[in-house]
Image (cartoon, rainbow, N blue to C red):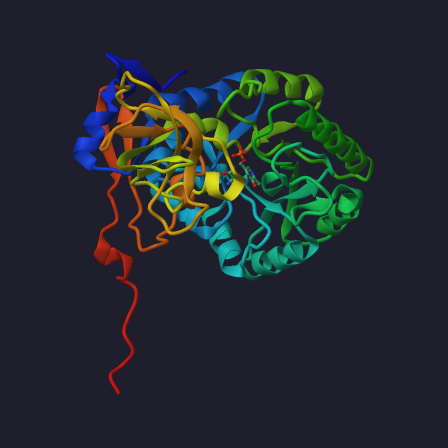
Length: 416
Ligand code: LLP
């Protein structure tokens, strides 16, 4: 579904005009569509009907508790990577028994809390982590449910910063040695082996790498069975891509169908950890043009959102669409859309044909995933507001940070 559409020549989120949101809540503001989030979640969950499954939204993609709550109400699970994300999930009404805990650096305190609330599974990424989890679980007198995150050495063919399934990166356990780590896990008194987990990267636009990884993981499942280790679930991570520009990624339905075909006849529950696919195109970053700066070589639109609000273009040279909220007629110019931060890398988009005037509103598209969550206070800029639109209503789900909040946790040295 398309959540952001022009009606009467004005860009709307569902049935709310973006200009009305800017007027009421100011800019920059992230705007999310509830209907889009729900439709994307359902496209995963519905395609898994008839198989035991858990669709665990990757909280890192968008951790606003209103967004998590929308998903929790649909019965979603959650993929977390920190105790902070765990507490958000709980605050949003998510069920701990539907939480999988990923990440290479789990601390003892994080393990303790996750065991206390009873998460579904720990996705363990190293032998040392396994031993540590055994120790923490033994101390609490509980059993820790575990999958090993294996690294199947598959090239996801995506940006190197978001490719995670190759041998030379920090994630997971080399699939070649995974069998021996499972054998070790089987000897640990407070560890219960539940599954095999892998996540090979993000923004994948073809199914082949996923299916390659799956084939390798299934071979491991068979080898484990021969050694008397039965796993009950397969966690295939997240990674399904979305359209930012002209990509044509497969839809969840096609992906799920291909996976189901390969695991048919095996008694395996399926777990997925989609983030971007659920929320990327459910959100825009609404921003206002402060200045138009025409130089001899370039035209700049200086807007009130910056790299601290939306880091993807600066960090990954990511292409994000830019749409005028109220398109004008006239001769377009090729604008670099840049923020007020004092860095040359502070841009949101480059060379976009736009007809603009000061105070115009722009929507930076596909900003629902890895947008607000990666924002910072760099240049002492308060973080943006967040709004969820539900049909013809807009709800403020995070108010804009105030100036006082920027230094509220700081203190002066004593007077000498
Ligand atoms: N599971 C694990 C273990 C992950 O590491 C990730 C993402 C996901 C699931 C969700 O992946 P998704 O379905 O969203 O592709 N900041 C980058 C993306 C980093 C992704 C990190 N891991 C960006 O803005 O493109």
